[in-house]
Length: 572
Image (cartoon, rainbow, N blue to C red):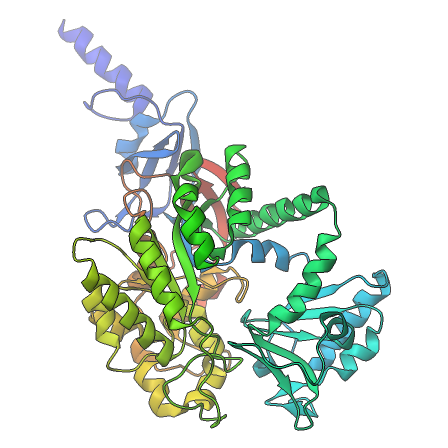
């Protein structure tokens, strides 16, 4: 009997490399041979992780995890690389990511002349009457100021000259302004006599002539003409376009290690599309969706359309999105005091406060989260006031996790209210360094230091900050965003109020667990723990330890969703 027991133990050791631990059901996937960052305080790093199906079943030393390796287990040798919880895009525009890959990419242009040249090239292959679309330009990133200009924005003449028979609409990088040529304005019926709509601005010169720039809700005038052109497509063509956008956006996200995407505002038609694709098992990424529609439609449809964890946790529709103001770059952010570089303007309130209050009531009635876009200090104050009143009126409601999307520029007196009220600051680290060159011009140094991207001040108030890129406003690149969050270093090497930067651990948590918490999904994702979804990004190096200057060199080598490799392999 003694010989039999020893022989059996030897056999177990030979097969599993473990000691006297009881046998377990083999894993479907094991990662080992590198560093596994869990984002769990009790066990911050481990050597290996075992996955069965779409869930994590074990983490620990490689020797312990070896017993989960069976004949059919796929074993990935990390080769010294680092596995982390999959990045969660805390605020982006999913269909916009796909659409951005189907139009002119203007994000890297450094002059208006470059934009005109790109449009001229597109005209060569476009049919007469076909719309030419683009996205990503930002006048503050041009190396020269166009002449003539209004508030730094060029006149449309040069653009219209190269596209006389094609309407052109080019969306600003922020998504809060658009540039149109003469043909597009003609189709939209815009003339010198056209008034700016509420919450919007048709930019005109001193003679009253529209220069082609449409801020905030004014862009809707040209969008209607674009919509009429798109409606001429067959339903099959429109569906093919939409599905292609989903495919391209998913591909882009996976290539950057993003496993979950919080979609910051779509209408019910897009929700229906998501449900259809998810129901077919074709929605590879995990989507958490905010519905942005009229209050009337929200009252009528939200309760029926709300869904949590559909298709094995690939689709959740459980939040409302409202926009309170515009963006800083286009001077649409709603400020308490006038812009330093435009003393006649305090920005734009794009949704009346009464409508925001009604949206808050709908969210309460339906048990739905609420996320409100607020960039300027006035917009943030007004939204906090709405939230505080709603919370006081419903003391029985708890764990609401309502959010302010962006929360970029705050009055000192409003910063503590985030922690006091339990309002989540859904922010984007990359916006800090991307906007830094013109924040001082817009706000002046005193206001910028007081409340611009004040991550440490917010965290000290007790607030939770969720991170993201606002893609396609910025590229969906977690590494660039992480670098911005931990260094606050602009392209010219200057550091924008470095006392507010996050530590490496704080930044990674903001991009994983905090983002999951902000969507009420922290029991499922955001860290690597037994029972949680096996959503993992593998990085070429450890972003918690490498020097600052080495961070941008980090590559995503694998992306895993639900225990399945959806992107890459070692060496990518």
